Length: 90
Image 1 (cartoon, helix red, strand yellow):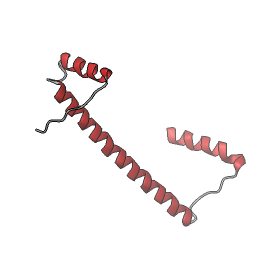
Image 2: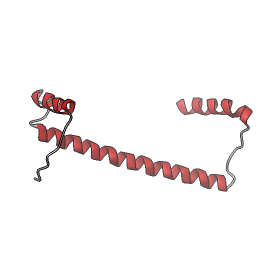
Image 3: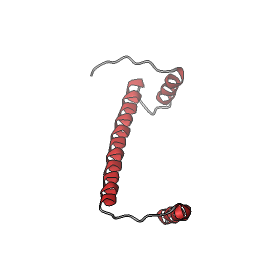
Image 4: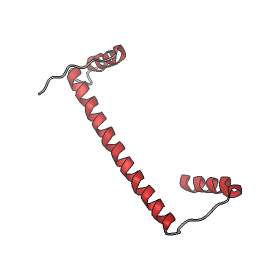
């Protein structure tokens, strides 16, 4: 297994020591590897969210180009947004 030296802040080091002492991990390396796995997972999830957002944006733009939209004037905007947020919460 490759070895890598890393620098932690005092707070991070204290946290790692605390969770090792508490028995949650056998040693600091194990804790840091788990943290890296968590980072990898979060980055993958972020990429999926961005891809989903791109898909929704494209669908919205396609709908606009196809004329599939309802025009709302400024006076009705607040009421429309309230209705949408109420139906989304249900």
